[in-house]
Image (cartoon, rainbow, N blue to C red; front, top):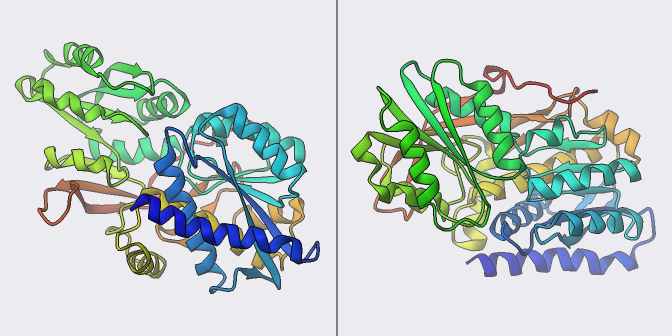
Length: 396
């Protein structure tokens, strides 16, 4: 299904790129999309690309134009490698004359792209890379982000897990996404006690040794004991449940994920967490359009990062509508700072201080439904942006 999904949306992008030479310079808006077309986060990249193309279609009313200018999408495959992404973004801004760039999938790649945007003085709209540092201490004024950050993930999950008498250990990947996620989660926990942090390589397939260290840290603690997992891409950390955690009264908790990863959630009925997106949770016209049209095109629901890609596209088009098609960087920065726009998740607003999109998160409980291959996250409640004190971590 993913191959078919990608092929169809890639045709759209290729058509737009092919049209470029026929259009006079200045009569088009050139957007570079740098993402993991291949590599460890390939599934995320493909979803983002599909959502981005659908979002452009939605936001332009099917015309693929803004203020009379044709939108041209230039695709770049960073393969999940920071050095590759860095050179591709430089080529997009320099050789391809991209007005704005969107991406990437990986936080490690995103951190390598930030100085390139600053060097070329062009906007990079980050979607879906999560690390706090992107809009934190590594940020510069050319960076905006529609994707959620680690603090938004952490604070919303703390809503579900941070209770007196709870002891927590964390399991995360040993790179920016995992470490920033745990740091933000640790900062957000006020009542529970965090006793151990376990970091494993992104390539890990055997979780036995790490799981044993987690068990040893928790097994003798009184009260409720939880392993909170922050994981992206390949590998299945939920396999640690096979080590008979119940014998020690240890539960697993995590945030939302893509549907294939949530197949593992079926073994954890009643598990709580907070998610960025699940197609059945937000109730708004944009999400209704996305779900209906995704089913129509792909005979399947939109996934986690499809919604993110659509949000990024809507943000770009809304900014260009407000600027009347003016792609000058300073005009776009002025336009986008403080700008609100409607997405499949509901309203997002770019915070002026760090250009991070303030957005809702969704507190869920897993239900097992035989009609679905995955554990279904049932909405407990929407956590509104104003309920989360998301710290400003840049040095503006």
